Length: 157
Image 1 (cartoon, rainbow, N blue to C red):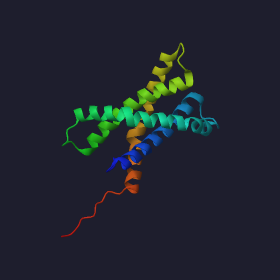
Image 2: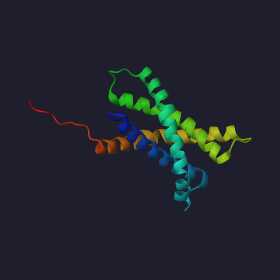
Image 3: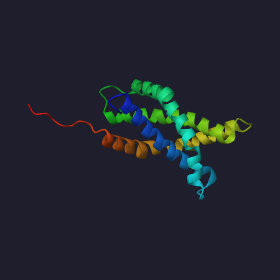
Image 4: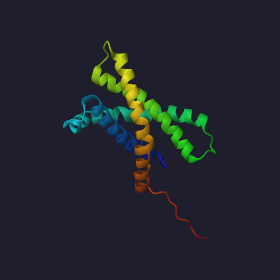
């Protein structure tokens, strides 16, 4: 979304921030329980995770996701179909990469790395897809259109 590179970067940053916050809360609660330290633990890992996520989103995943999505949808397809297709591919790519990041950050590259990674990958996908499609995607689009309204004024002749 966005009419230019600046708006696209803002949209991507908003989407990425909300997904990282949501997935951070999910993972902290999933692995440590809902303790009184949840906010501290999320805050401690938020900036590094956000930097990694933004980099992956902008440099790697969005190009691949959009490339794959536009092989499946036609220009004449409804916008919702395009948005949902891109979103699903974005979630798949980001979950694969960010689960790797999370596994390395919390468990390292030890004997049980593959088991930890696959477990994290599965749990993250279960949460990330509905979070993106039902909460973060619509919320980001709503907020973005309030910040950057689409010019709907009809000029009279």
